Structure formats: structure tokens, C-alpha cells
View (cartoon, helix red, strand yellow):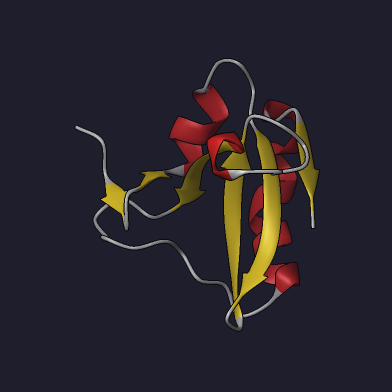
Length: 87
């Protein structure tokens, strides 16, 4: 079963790390919340490039971080699992 939020897939960190081909992780600020998006390309030029948003299992919405640093701290130990990580 795929978990979705407003029609966009939600992946746990483990799901994103295991995805083939490797995903690009991008930390973005949306309405004051820092989210981690996963895409097929480094630059998400259209909706088709967006694969999923990071969430925590047991929740029904994306993880909203208080800062870019907090999101980066979560991704940092797992950076090698992604094609790229950017802010």
C-alpha cells in the first residue's frame, strides 16, 4: 500500500534509501516548513520529477522540520544512499 498526501507519495527514509534508481533529496521551505522532497532529477523542473515527500511511518502527513539544519542533520548520515542531497 502506498501512503499519499494530497496525491503525492510519502516515503519513509528507508523506502527512499532503497529506491532504484537512486533518488535526489532536496530540502525545501514551503510555507515556513522545511520538507524533504525526493525526485528523479537534481532539479525538479515539473511535477513528473517529484517522486515522494519524507514522512514518518504511522503519520499521515510529511515531516515538517523547524529548520533546514534539522532536515540536513537527519539526511547527512544517509547521503551516500542518494544520487544527490541539496538545499
